[in-house]
Length: 361
Image (cartoon, rainbow, N blue to C red; front, top):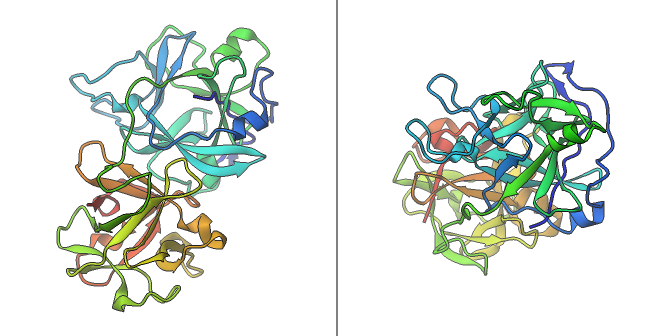
């Protein structure tokens, strides 16, 4: 497994500059060529261990403030009040910035995303894939760049600030929050910005009876988790490019193929069973960009950026997935959780609602 170091520039949140100095990459970083030669796979779960502190990166999971602060905590599995998934992370490849791969970093327990920038410089999680206030989507994009001397040791650096994910200065206290710090020349400070990938936990696998990395799978139905008798459907059976926004409809339903793309890193295209050259594509609404929809379009290179999807399994719900557009980080959503024929599919920020959870079988 290759190593990763994160680079970041200037961080904006609620109109406020939080940390404002662009720093160079560490001297022990891999080269850009080495970093680009490997991209993390969204089917892998990781823990992030900071060696000087003996803590892992953890998302708060107690009775009062579940899924909020990013803290240092001793490694732990399932306990009385937590199932341990709040210490597991997924890296979602989101393209290239400044010549390096960038990722959204999702906490698997809460399915929320590491976001740069509270007013005090702390790192927080948010229910959205992208910030809807000033700061924008880049607040959830990170460089993950390995060190040159150990393939499992990496830095995590925001793309919109010159700062790194930093273990708290008080390294002896559990539950201290991670902070926003520039790269220091001091060895111990550098060490507190390095995180060791623990790759020995589990592999996050899609349901291989239906979602195969080896080729096209046929006769897959897709329905929202909240209803058993309404499915994704092609209005009027019209397969022309962009003819209709896809919607939900009661049986009989259409069937689809799901195939991993040439881009790899667990990205998929979804196409019509009898017309495999027609793919699900995000439709960009000029009137209401926060409610982009889904259309069918020819599966081609020109539109690939809007035709690639992450399909992420649920922890506790069999055959249930979230479907995330790689280009925007937004989630496939059944509008207003409706069950009527013609319910529109829209693209909005992920909130982990039942209308954003899909049964694929």
